[in-house]
Image 1 (cartoon, helix red, strand yellow):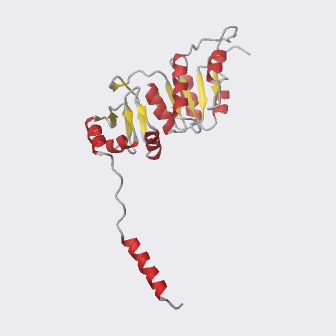
Image 2 (cartoon, rainbow, N blue to C red; image 1 turned 90 degrees about the vertical axis):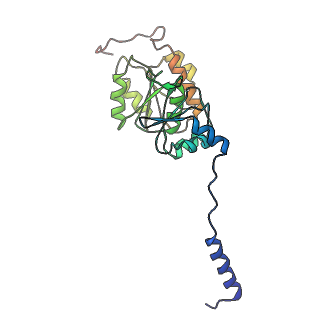
Image 3 (cartoon, rainbow, N blue to C red; image 1 turned 180 degrees about the vertical axis):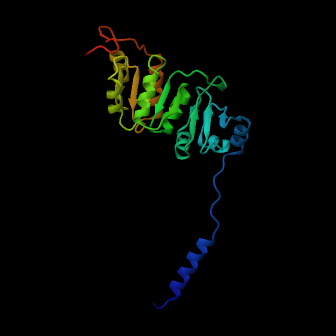
Length: 232
């Protein structure tokens, strides 16, 4: 192939583009960096961010990538912050009134990890446990019956709910983002909600967790509960 002057010029331009330094990464504004550095506490491997508005810039300065972060209860996690948690596999622990939560409003048992679920659970004051699979999730849920409300996150929530309902003292429901949660709470009064972590918005999940925290979990009016071990 015969190189023309145009070919040579294009090759030179291409080489020069490759040699140009990469643009510097966008850093957080100095004010954000200063404020965040003063409100970050690290203890027992958990990074506590004492900020009421948690954005990607705040999380980036706090250095939480790949670790566990604790947020203040009621803190607002911005869309960029939620995306940061998902992209950097950050686990969210809950915090109450500036101190680590010891008693949670409920418990999320997950065999399928979801950063959005974990973030919503942390904001709602719920605890989170990750187990090795659906069978382990079912076993753990059954251990907790009657102690606190439970949400079970798995790849096949309908099957998990069906298996849980084989126990006469369990009222489990598989829900999606399109479910009428208020109607479900009034008619079934579920003790366990089963869901897939995908397809849920953070706001919808937070509403679900708060609804389950405050819901009456006794049997609905006219509902005939069977005794444990009795035939159906």
